[in-house]
Length: 476
Image 1 (cartoon, rainbow, N blue to C red):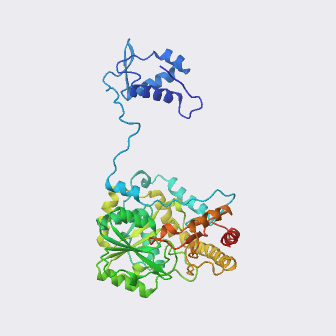
Image 2 (image 1 turned 120 degrees about the vertical axis):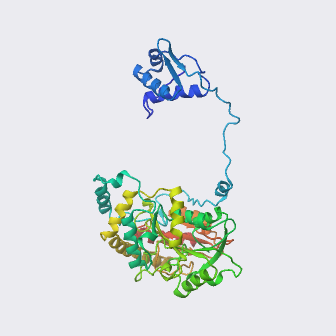
Image 3 (image 1 turned 180 degrees about the vertical axis):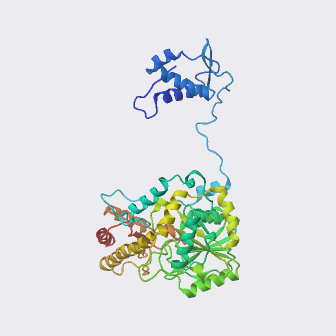
């Protein structure tokens, strides 16, 4: 037997020995019924203690690879089938039609040139110094230091009920959402809710309306279900209801009315009412993605579209990723009552529920007033950063770009001149030490108008201004 024990390997020596013998048996180097060297001889050959060999033998015997016969020695199990030769060097499993569509779906991967100490305008990021981590750690420790039965059992598939209660109260008071705690379901990010809703509501060739530019991940989920995606262009005030094709037979529309993603802009009341009337006439459902509705910097946040709905046609999505921190991976959905049972039964099949410990800490974070105080600090900090960005654009890029003036969100989408090469601009900006992101991936129309995304939530005010100054030189 050819054995080599790696002294630097992380795995214990007995495990290395076990693995090598196991692989020799599986590959046919040690045939069924053959006798293995005695433990003492094998230990000497491998340069390990005899107890290490005995531990490896014990593991192999427990798994059925070898057998020990008193007075005779240790043998490879005689009843093991001979190894079947591989037909090729590698095996590629056959994918279902859904799996094939996954591979064909657009994968948005943004690359930037290698730069030295770049100013990165990545969007959707939080500024770590704003979040009250000391409070968060204390809330988590509150549950970790108890023997509460909550930690020793699975939670509800609908979510931790005190969190659902806290969210229902918060959403009614500050977002104008009409709901009971029973209508609130906690999900592992809004993307999970979209996945389940797409499975429940869209069949093959069913039509879904989406915004362009818009949230690409939602579009791809709808397409993966076999749906026909119809893009409706947005303007300065969001989803243009009047632009819905007259021949449309859509069963679903996905919209971001509070702050259109990614262009920016808020859907005014007449359009909201017109969209609800359209849904009623066409017996359709609306998914309202309120991904950053709390982050408005001029007056109070605008009430949600769902609060205007009298028919139960609006599904409301929210997330904690933008206002707490992305790694939390918690979101919530407010469902019309007829959708509750099918949604929960579907969710139970794919996910037994988000982590209860995390949900409990978030519930206390809300009920003890930390959440609304944190939102107040976010609005002040991010509002100031947005002002710095807007002022820098006015100072360094006057009349070269245009963007939404809505004082909301965590990024700005800059529309460039038609002659601008978007991809080349991203590369040149990276060479200048500035990370910016192309906007083409968010547009469904082709050719897409040249645009770039500038996120400001993860940068200091000094870096924001310096980044725009460098970008202006690139565009000069």
